[in-house]
Length: 86
Image (tube, rainbow, N blue to C red; front, side, top):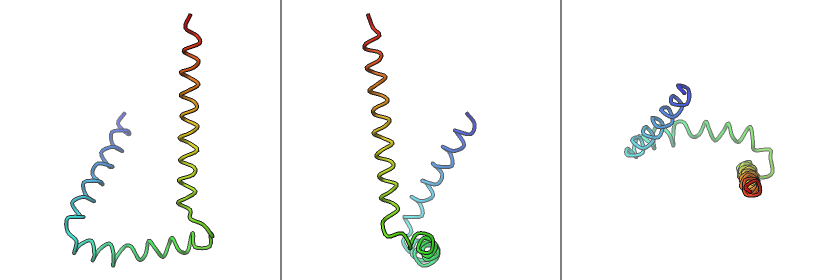
């Protein structure tokens, strides 16, 4: 329970930090656009630039397949409960 609450708290704090940071466009330009982002983009280019398609599309596809599988499981559970009722 503590770990779950800690994760949620960290996510909320990150969201609040990003929201507050976005209110200062000069800081975003200086620290993110001209500071951190070029390193992130360079790392992604080195790691994933050799792949001839978008890796993000793979993530979307995997998420779609997972959602469909979960939907099928839910439908099976619902059907099994309906048939078990006399």
